[in-house]
Length: 189
Image (tube, rainbow, N blue to C red; front, side):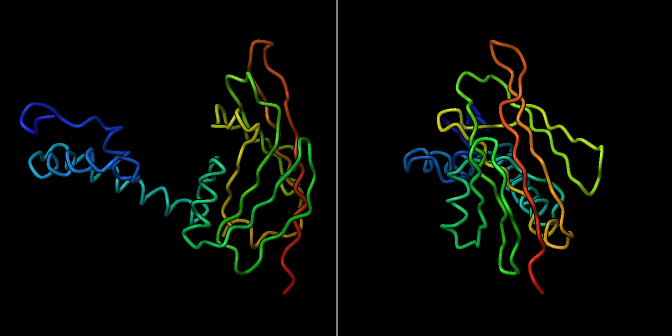
């Protein structure tokens, strides 16, 4: 790739930022970024977006659907992760300790062949309200979805129950593939 002739594809810049590019690709990208202001601006935007997403997650403004590898990466970075593993259609008693930094749930579900997966949330603190998130990422090879929520948002909540329902779209149409119940109790004072 010649710095004077072309720009770096955004997916390559993202791979470089995530540390997933090999050494030769990183070197080529670094050389290009030194000579190309347009790619440098795009790379800066990718970095800023990543920081903004981190701040939003920490502040409890959003939740995320991630991979099991992502959760393990957080643990490897030294974050205190409370991870709940739920069997298909499982129920669990849960809490958040004062030391927890990340709260996640691994939901097992039969996902092979599923093309699209929606997530419906209901909580006993808001009876009758349903929040549906369409087309969430999932790991069909491992038949799981990893749901990450804000510790800051959950920690102050009173005892309550939360239900997550997975709705799949596949060759058979739309169908429920799993329903999970979380019985939250505040950490003892």
